[in-house]
Amino acid sequence: MFDLNHDPLKDLREFFLNHSEALQNASVLLGGQSGVRCVHAIMDDLAIQPKLTRRMEHNLIRLYELLTLKDVHDPERIEAACFAEIDPDSPIVEDICLLADEFTEHLRAHFTAHVVPPTALLPA
Image (cartoon, rainbow, N blue to C red; front, side, top):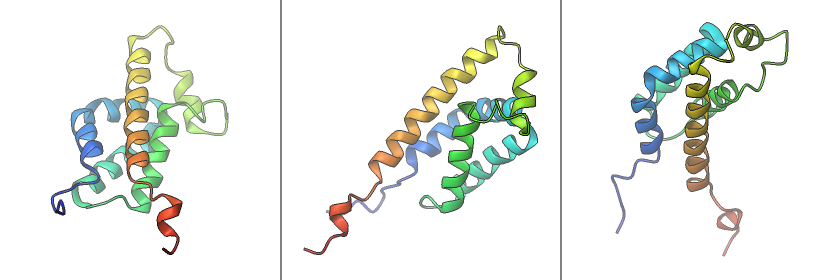
């Protein structure tokens, strides 16, 4: 039978619900106002969208890059300035690392579970 109640975003919705404050705090620390706007856009979309949209995918990737410090070495980016303000010995650093790891696992699981295999696109 078909599962009409299947929610492809269930795990991501739960992750953002359970870690909303931590994600907002980490994103503002690492990316300023644009970082927190990214998290808010994701949370807004997760509240109303039945499936992943291009905008959501773009913002999820942006948040992933923010949490994994992708752009902290580029002096032209806000992330570099924000990162320079963080004390490496602060306990928040470990919290952000753990949050980034958990977020990465959720993204990996979501994209692995919802990728259409290339053979499914071939005619029978």
